[in-house]
Image (cartoon, rainbow, N blue to C red; front, side, top):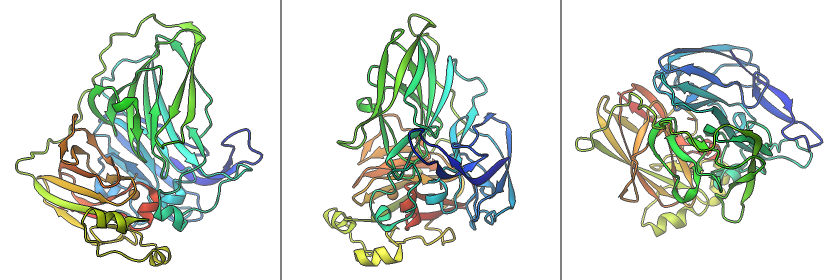
Length: 439
Ligand code: C2O
Ligand code: CU
């Protein structure tokens, strides 16, 4: 049972006032739901908010009716009502849940939690740890700034906060022991912040992205990058010595580097050198897209501050060039193929033939990053700016840099109308959302 309701939480003890959060079961994050791959999940969601809500199981391949999109896949859960979600956990991996109704405020105030689907035979580690990352925009007292959904956030990089937390708290120290092997599951639950984590003296290996196994590898430039809604599973061997400590820093944004936490070694020694246990995860039952016969589709993202300039530079004719004043007033700021969404009920922007392979070529004709998420499916990221990706990674949310072109490929095998949107929740709320029909 998940009960969504407002409540007061102290995000950090140094603040005078607690913040008014919206929480599942009285905590942020909500309870970690853990099931074995193949199990059936049944969760009753009860709405204790003063407004409608739903729960979406981000990255999980559920039947369409269980996807938690208001009006599109279900009627929203009205205040003091319930809805029962029930589906099979097909793919192992790191996922999360969050409302899909006015997400920019509901998720932004703390309604989210981890969903871990364990492999039938998990790889061996000493500790399996989840870090749900988020940031908050707090006043000096510690109360939440109430300016959710303001037009500046919508037209720029989204609501970036001024206080970063791990599992809802400032975590100054992360205690470890020499020789310990940790599987660290990172989940970015922030509305808009992109994380670029540098473990400095440690050498993490990426073993899964968005829940899906990947060839174990060192992150590019030593930086573990997570756009909003993305997950990364790491193998982290604690190679330091008792009493030592080492910072984990976030250096994604130029000039805004800060310390996320400090890894601190206890006096205990678990072993003297890293274990030689295998770290390759077993694959999930995803269907392999056939690139030769795949049907191709083009998708263009445009809009936002400086969007007309970028589109002009790229030689793209945007028919959507509304003036900045117009954008501020209509909340139609972002466009997918020239259309700005106004809610969850819309005509499909694409209809994909079921049980066949598709390639979607996506162009970011804007000046901002966008983590693009497709519901109901995982896709392979096959190229970036025309160059084949090294790992052909499976993702459900792919971070696109300004002016970047990304191709994704997948078999459309889950029937229904699926949301396709930017996971910067302010961008989603101001137009950057569409429906892809699989039929
Ligand atoms: Cu994480 Cu459409 O959502
Ligand atoms: Cu976006």
